[in-house]
Image (cartoon, rainbow, N blue to C red; front, side):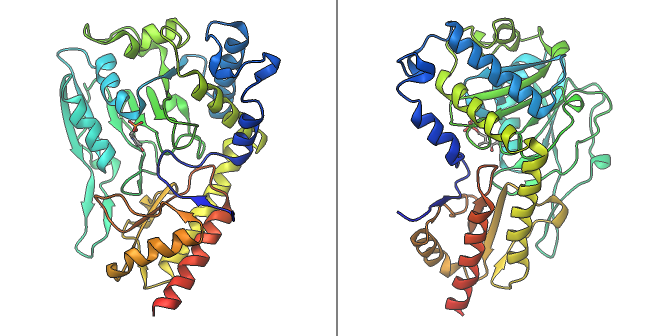
Amino acid sequence: MSEVFNFCAGPAMLPTAVMAKAQNEFINWNNTGSSVMELSHRGSIYMEMAAQAEADLRELMAVPDNYKVLFCHGGGRGQFSAVPLNLLPQGKSADYIVNGSWSKAAAIEAKNFGNINVINIREEHDDGETSLIPNDKWSLNRNAAYVHYCPNETVDGIEINYIPETNGVPLVADMSSTILSHDIDVTKFGLIYAGAQKNIGPSGLTIVIVREDLLGNAQQATPCIMNYKTCADNNSMYNTPPTYAWYLAGLVFQWLKELGGVKAIAKINQAKAELLYQTIDDSDFYNNNIEVQYRSKMNIPFWLKDESLNEKFITQSEQQGLMALQGHRIVGGMRASIYNAMPIEGVQALVDFMQQFEKRMR
Ligand SMILES: *Cc1c(COP(=O)(O)O)cnc(C)c1O
């Protein structure tokens, strides 16, 4: 089989080196004669691995000591409920910045648990360009319990390319599709969460990074497995954690460290995104309508000017080993998700195909 590049938005590509290592030790991990999947999460050998994975993630993101790192269940959407349950006491409200479909879904879910103030910052210009209202024009509530936003909108291909100023109100970020793709200053956040299946590992694991002073005020009805304090007090092992996903995430963290860390991967990510956007912008056959400064470096939607060619584009790209380029059903067109595990060779193969396809169809 010739090389396949998988542009799926999630679950997404994993580094080949990581999967090869996992395969190699699948039935005999660390000379235990067992798969890591079969071992107790309370055993010292498993707990050592788990602690190392946390230490590696802390190092990669420079997480300060006054933050807990939790390995949870329930995915990104689980956090849409967990965040208000833990951080939104009765009598308070939370601000939800909406710039795309995931931040909108987070706001809708949060309404089940308290008072939510939705701030739509998306702007469609007359010329068809999509842009965002700048931070200083957001009508934030100074007494809000927190401000929730999504720095990279996976479906829409929109990135808020700065950390919003919230005047002391804790900032909560859904980083499911952007975590570990470039450097961030964790101290600017009250809480960061990310489902693992885009930039961390397999699905089933959710990372939560939370400042300690925000723990301990959960609503009475908070399920124990969603209670950050309960999770933190038990080192994410109050109930059985997703043990295999935790292990595989640990391998991805090691891979990323060996590669030179987040700064090194950020350079590669920048080069990948530039290559693809350049190809789109240089052609009148393809189009991306997001204002340049807000374009996502992880999820790049693009549209064929002649939409009747969509099906041909998908069929022929698959024949070249370029998989899962169909756009999300609510935005249409194409989408290339190019997370950390996508090598630049994959993006090069995609742009080569796009240019050849354009020539053939003219
Ligand atoms: C994928 C995604 C989600 C949903 O994650 P699940 O694990 O499927 O619940 C939420 N937010 C963002 C930004 C995502 O990309």
